[in-house]
Image 1: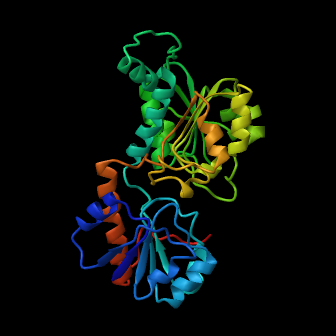
Image 2: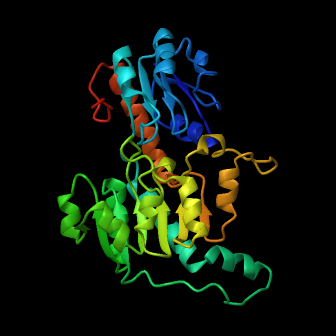
Image 3: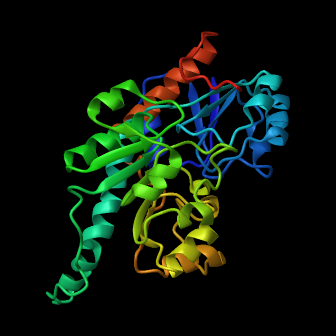
Length: 329
């Protein structure tokens, strides 16, 4: 199959090209959207990432261009209208698990950096400032860590937190028996908010979960709570988060995702004026740490993403079912 790969970065070319396959990949740096969908003419499929668009209008164009598969090289599929794809006869496949430990470990990195302020200590030492003033952290041992979503990534995160000696509570619509055996205590969403010193989000973005962390949720959290999000930006209402930061409700905020990230992430904008006032305000807080959706970014994860993506396309090309196919509910 001839596949158009959108939102291509150097590492996408490197890892996809390393997988033995008869499929032909053509790489585009541009995102898939209304302005670029015409590039798919003459292709059999598209390979897209988190900030590409495949709504009903674009899927109609993809169908007209003969596209047979939308291959997501990520776990989330909130940017694809799956029902429209099914109606158009276009199969949608994804990479549901590509090293859950990669994202879980990144969440821990955000926690540790915010807590022990190693990023600030590093910069101080570079300037011969060896003072410990304003670098005080806290022990994770004995703290209550609340986890929202105990899928593969959430469960991997729970295991790490248990290793720290934290008490782990969790909320998930579908409780995991293995997680229970590990010592994870399932509670209501409200109890996670109320009782946690650290809250980490590991759930997909759906109409139900959009803005699940809003001002009402913040009001129910402990003062000075640490909030971590390595899932999807729109789980958090950013304007409400800014208000919670200003009022001291949030003590630490670590995010690897942002609701409007498609206009920013994976680009070098160091010489540009960023017109997004919301993210500018967010980055002005000293207790906020943001990374540009890099939780997945390990050699192991990139290797698995490429291999699974090619395997998914193989299934479609051969007319076989794929264990990673996305179906509408």
